[in-house]
Length: 219
Image (cartoon, rainbow, N blue to C red; front, side):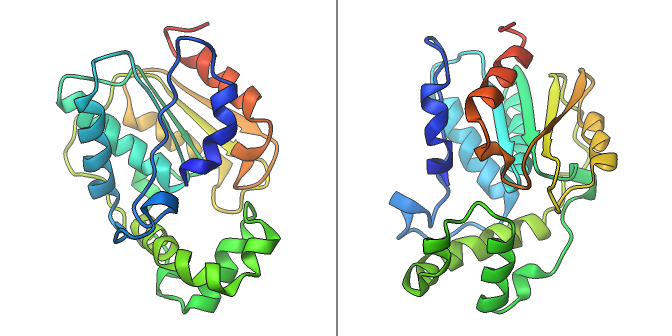
C-alpha cells in the first residue's frame, strides 16, 4: 500500500516530489474492485504520470510493484516521456517472473503465506474482520504477480536500472537478479540490504539516499 512509503516523505530532500501509487481495493480505495493484471496497473499509472507537467522522473517498485514500475517505464518511453531511472526491489527479473499457484490457495493458506513474508503487524494478522477486507486485494496482487508475462517484442529501456534485495528474502535468488540488466541498454547495478522481503521498511532514509545518488540528476 502507499502507506508503506509514509516514512519516505521526510527522507526526500527539498525539490524532490514523492508520489506513491495506491492500488484499488487498498486503504482509501478499499471500495474499488481490485486489479489483477500488471499491465493494466501499469497502464493506469503511466496515464496518471503523463497527465502531470513533464519533469525528470525516477520510478521505484517493490515486489509486484517492481514489475508494475518496469511496465510503466516501457509505456513512458513509448510516449516520448522516458523515466530517467528505474529502481526495482524484491522481484525476479521480468523474464523469470510470473510463476506460482499461491493465488489459487484458500483464504487461510493465502493469508498465512502473506504473513510469513513479514511486514504485517501481528495485531493486523490476527484480526479476522480486517483480513476479510484486505484479502481480495492481496489475492489480486498475488494473481497479478504469478500470471505476469512481459509485453512481447518491446525494445529495451535506455535508462539505468538499480536492483535492491533483502539478504533474507525467500522470494528472490540473488544469483539470478542480474537478469534485470537485460531490460536496458543503460547501466545496471545491484544493492544488497539488511532485512527479508520487506527490507524497504528497514532504514528508509538510507534507501532513499541511495536512490537519489543513483539517479543521474543527483550525486
